[in-house]
Image 1 (spheres, one colour):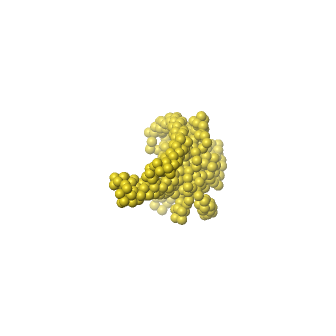
Image 2 (tube, helix red, strand yellow):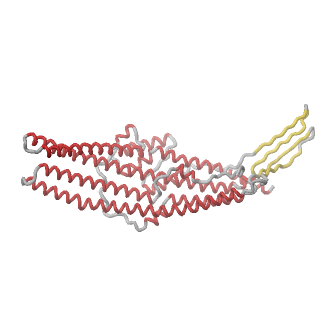
Image 3 (tube, rainbow, N blue to C red):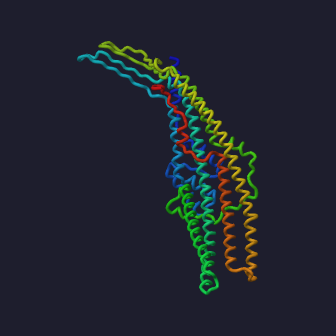
Length: 466
């Protein structure tokens, strides 16, 4: 009776388990703000939708910066809104773990002829389930923390992908602009060559060379336009833009190279401290350890019921008593469930080690790519482009002094534009490398919520059939 009293008190106290006001989204929102500098919003009401729409219109009223692009994605990306629902699902499981099993009514009535021969009535509840409720709540709380970490990692991943898509879109628009200049110069050269060949001042071979260059420049411009369109569409998908919002404006050029590169000395330590996948793997190992304790505790007795009962036979009055139900471990002694739990724990422990190794390696690799992109871009900016400019100035002086032909001047102009295009390409690679390096300090890109949730062990307490 003392055990039953404690169980009932636990059940009554646990019955107060309720849902939180923000569904656990506040923790996600704060972490995303710290890592990206932008606000994440979970749209659950009409007021939320109206607020997000107003904020979106405000941002779209100006040329989009990289931060604006990330903010649009955090507000409008439907995939993120679907990911946030994982919080609601996990919180529901957490609340359910705090609401004990319902009472059970058992009723038996037998009749022979017109006479009632026996009546049995009883109320019972799952005593073992009630006693293990605190442990189950603790396990579900850890699971909820894991889901919060996974959702946060997904938000940061989308933010990083959006920033890279913005870089691609701006760089592709710049490349299209410069390829248009190359095409215009080739058009002028081809027309001049045609006219000179018509009056006999230019050979047919040289004319065809100019025409071939113009044809190639036109094809390159078409490719650049298609790439600019595709890059713009990729960004629109990530930002969740459609309809009239597709008229968004991008800046004319990428930001200049920073004065100095990032210091890579403490990146590995920061990654071990901040990366969400490392934290999640550690929490999963702790959660599996808790699950192992529960499995061992219930390996022999997996179902225990206690309740009040009364019986009646014939015309006699009711007799009162208690009913106890227990599972007898004749065929299943729980060894398979314990072995499975131990193997799952070892799997989780090794996964933590692998995630840590991968995180360190990824940060080192991405920092190497970042420094290479920085040094290469600086080389183009400080050496190649200025040299091409000096050559162009010298060619212009030679043309003014009638020491160089107009075709040589046009060819030099094309080479200068090509050098600028190469610089823009390296600048684009630098900003993409910078975005990937920043993202690597928070978590690994790729891998959806479904894949991560599938790795998590089941919470089922039932041992039947194992």
